[in-house]
Length: 225
Image 1 (cartoon, rainbow, N blue to C red):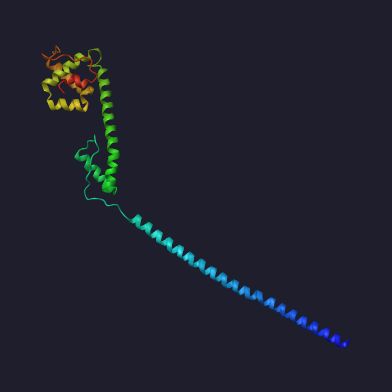
Image 2: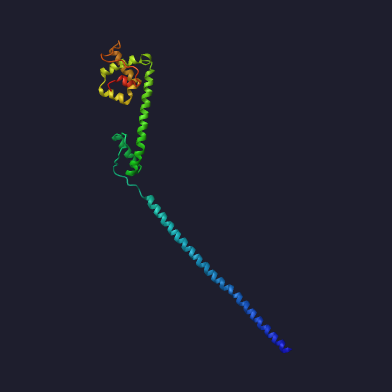
């Protein structure tokens, strides 16, 4: 019985040692895993830092390209050459003024031409409308004028027409007719008074008919234009 007892104790001791060894082995394994995990984390951190550095470098390159584009200035010509849109009239002074504006704004030849092509027709239309409105307004004021308007308007225009034929030049008649100033009450008043001064009986020159029913007083006053 004692041998069996000793054998049993030896076996138990051996199994216990093996169990302890297994325990030690199992305990040391996590340490190795921890080391590998740390290395993996380090590699991951290094990869992240490398990627971040690459992204930063790429971002700096994009910003540099954007900065180059922003720094690029349009090619401003020494002298602009403009082609006026159809139906648009502009004198040399107007073109020179626009050229100075375009140069101060730093516009290229193409940009300045595009701007003129879009704005000039609109400005031309607005100017024409303003002249027509002013001409109409002056005509209405002349028709209602207390001195020469009213019921005797056509008769008094004949008196003004006589003065125009006596003192006015063809150039003056063209100017007054084309500009619409011939409808202005002060212009008509001046010629009306001049006509009365040279003919107190409101004489109408031979071959001249008193105007009647014309909507545009300038054409009545200057029939040859």
